[in-house]
Length: 290
Image 1 (cartoon, one colour):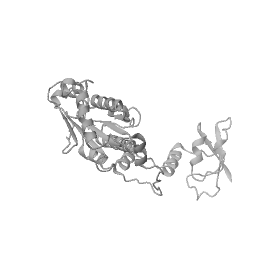
Image 2: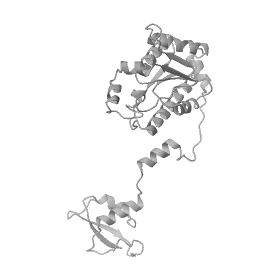
Image 3: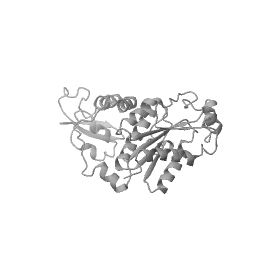
Image 4: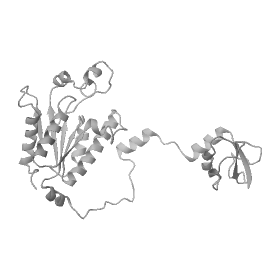
């Protein structure tokens, strides 16, 4: 073995070069700034590395070696695989629990389900979700709310508002909501979720009847007049692109379980009253019983 002298301020990177073995990359570099790396004397094995005590390894060669051995992972490709399901894990088997869903529901004296509240920004989704959660809590029922804004602070903080990321945002929330329902919790998901195909995909995750779609049927004009976050104003000014209802479509449910229609009546349109309408549906379907 001969020595190859490489002048570098970051010696550890060369541990991944082809033909470089041993643990020399773990040793601190000599004080003169040169790093002696063992290489094979057979240059046919490493045609780019000609071993002699006076040669240097050009930075272009370093980059070429790294590129050849560690192909760049495209962020776009990763997202496409994630969304389209092209990359599937192998050798993974589902592990069944000894405690079934019915056992947990009996313990909680309620049936788990997902209440999916959808509608335009400003339609009152989050407000109704909070009122519903409070009303059920007062009845002794265990709930948890997945708010569209809140999940983007943690679980979905890496996602944008592009179409593909919106799809992934809904998919993740749907999967989490399914877990809550399986525990026996009444999970309230409050998201714009503008596309039917995404909402239907979440519905398909649960047993028949356990996905309760609630449509906040509030006209765009009313939502825009409320504009609690000032988002419509920004969208109209062109400062927000792809805003639902302005330059991105909202696909209303075609056959949802509950419709909360805006009538202009302060009593019937109050959040507590709307929450009671949802509770009436849950009682009718037996979700508030053990």
